[in-house]
Image 1 (cartoon, rainbow, N blue to C red):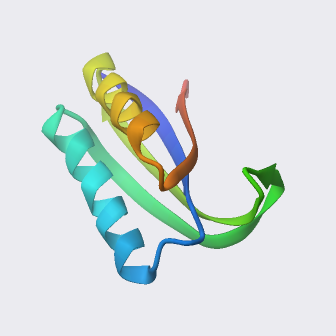
Image 2: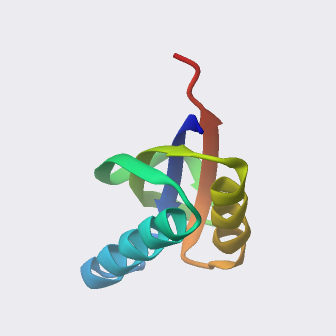
Image 3: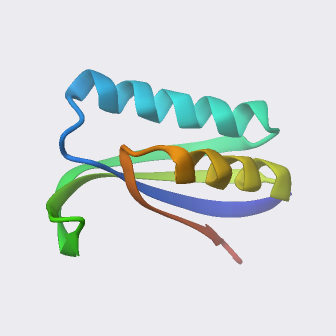
Length: 95
């Protein structure tokens, strides 16, 4: 298992309960696919570096995991279909 840093940005139109549900949903996707979550860092609502689909803000979430390729592939597959996620990035952490 390798270490990964998973970042995703939730659209600002999602309410507080929706943000919590989204974070829980994707944490469950990762753990059900065999990943171990080391840390979830909710950065909160921040201004984007550039507009994405006319959006200027987003809710940033960073998750540090140990996982195999199946967990990250399943996460990316589901995130691509979710209209509330405006950007995502999965980076392997080589320490």
